[in-house]
Amino acid sequence: MTPRPDRLSRLLALVPYFATRDGIALDQAARDLGITQAQLTKDLELLFVCGLPGYFPHQLIDLQFEHGFVDVIFTAGMDRPLRLTSAEASTMLVALQALLDLPGAVDQEAARRAIAKIEAAVGSSDTAVRTPAGPGESDNPTYTTIRDAVTARRALRIRYYSATRDNVSERVVDPIGLQTMDNHTYLEAWCRVSEGVRLFRFDRVEEAEKLDDAAAPPEEAKAQPQYAVLSENPDLPSVEIEIDPSELWILDYYLVEPLESLEERVDRGAPVRARLVYGSPEWLLRFLLGFGGRVRVISDVAIADSVNSAAATARARYT
Image (tube, rainbow, N blue to C red; front, top):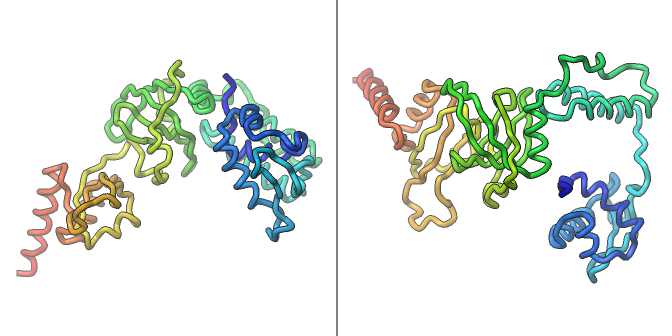
């Protein structure tokens, strides 16, 4: 089965697709594109508010699709090949080169081909790719397997090294997507062992095997807000904490994940339980002491005792 394109790629292709098939039925177009009719309708509603700079009504893409058929009124230029200016081409070349330098972020051979095509199209006198790919520069097969699984929406079995725990564990994960941050590429996936969304750094995946199982992360996992890399990094420790109602603002400012639905709480005056990811014990101790007992660790007795001891020592200095 051919994998469905991601939404951005699909949106870019929709206008020329419909421009050459004016009046096509929505259900037929959805089958051609490999998506549901509901998703296609959402895509068309988004395209309806996209267009040329200025973004006044006469500059927006104009599509009619209310009666089950799609008619293109105004394409905003998306029905003809894009002509890059020198500045635009230079920006794309720099971005592609940056992706080449990120381990596993893209298919390196595909990125080099794209660079060569852009250079040829704009007549660049400079070579963006420093040297041709040599034997040592071929794409890591593990990275290729991970990207292929994301594209094909297939589950993965991985062996992952945790730097914090200094051990290697085997996990089966359901890929959701890829993220890049701080010169690293991460696989975002539902971990069947942890039963939660986790980010796995590419260069710490020792082995990856694409399974026959379809990737099936829970719908709520795919729809949840994306936490920063730190909060979903399986290399880092975490604790469960209890937050008094007066300090719930920390949910918006720190990497804290509520363990219950804030909207469905019956007792609004009760503390909220959450998971806090931290980088070092020293930082965690300072963080907890700053709240004077209004934020408490409930999952680790040793950390709670350390906080109480440090607080008692501080009070003793005043007496």
